[in-house]
Length: 239
Image 1 (cartoon, helix red, strand yellow):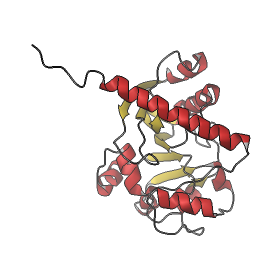
Image 2 (cartoon, one colour):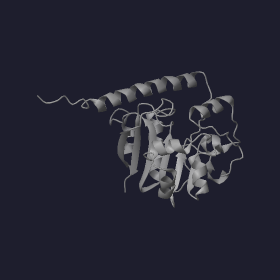
Image 3 (cartoon, helix red, strand yellow):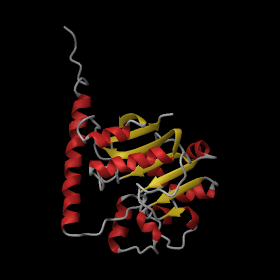
Image 4 (cartoon, helix red, strand yellow):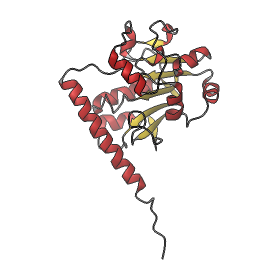
């Protein structure tokens, strides 16, 4: 008798867990919108970015890979004001790493909720409103990026798309903008994400993804506020 293959249903179970996770996110977002609560602006250290987007490679290896490239961190929150952030590490290494968030268009105000959120994401150093790098902090929306066509090598985005922004038409608009600014072969790496199944989010969403080769892989197991049961989505711009 053949041994039972215990991993046969693992992809299905993982997709179901991700779906449940995003149902909870939707409830949370609905509550914030219903009561007009302010969106929490998180900040995350370079170690988080390495684990989420670069297979936990060393800081030196990531910086070496990104030399000479243009990188956008979409929905970065207050991350650029943190000394142990990827933003500041890239700035020190001479890499064009831009933090993009509507809140960056105004003088930062760090309230108690933002401070608690920072501690929950393992950042211990205080946020510095005078942190260097003003030229690389961009106050803009994700679907209206102030970059030329084909000017960007890599887009990173954590805890924004499908979490705070889940409307399929809005997501389609954002993905079209990603396709515009990315070079052929450039990538957008997004997390956490649900399983993307064609036909479930409407034609506009599916059409927007036609500009990319889409690959998803499970996120590493971790705490729910950093690495919930979900996927890393890698969108590679087609030529």
